Image 1 (tube, rainbow, N blue to C red):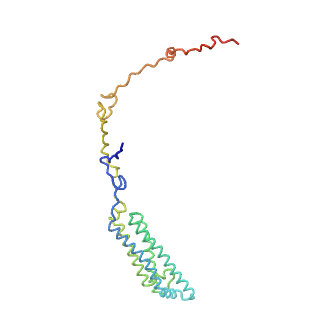
Image 2: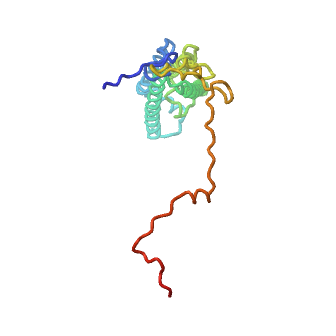
Image 3: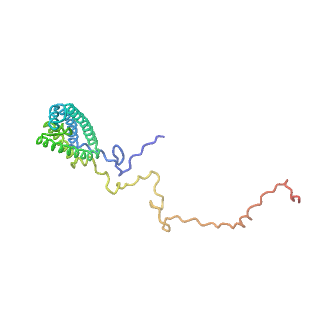
Length: 257
């Protein structure tokens, strides 16, 4: 006997990937452009490291102006520390850019929130470095903390990264993007739609006289209760039972002690 898989009940929609689950919305253009912006931000982080190596002479000159009393060996150590710090920061930035880019493309809502926080931190650092750059230009002093940003080329790279991050954040919070990260529920707020009823089983119609439902007691069609049978008294019941048979070999009168 072959078992046939039953079909879906009427009135209950089915979707690929699971019954009752809404299909994944397509990637909107706003999220696609935000993804591209974040990839550009990762590339700019690499460019920032290259700029630091290109600007070694400018970084050394900036440190020498800011620290005129330090020895050349100290300046060399500060230049090396500046380059190492720039490389470490760039690697962290590249990892964060790529993480946020692919998480946003996958529809992870946390990517918008975490990415916005990272952008705020980056924006604060960029503003602080710019203030330090103009302060250095006026006073002729500097420190190793923002030495890689105390050059014109470093400032250009920082502000390009800022605007790319700003564009990505704005695109991620557009209305079209919100529908992608938080799709509308498949069913209304009050639950699933009403079932249209299970189909009747062939050959098993409603019982006659019940009209498809069970009537209340006392109503026409309700089955009458069976008459109660009197329960015999215990003495009468014992007397009605036959006596058990006796063993013919057992003595009739047991000996007296």
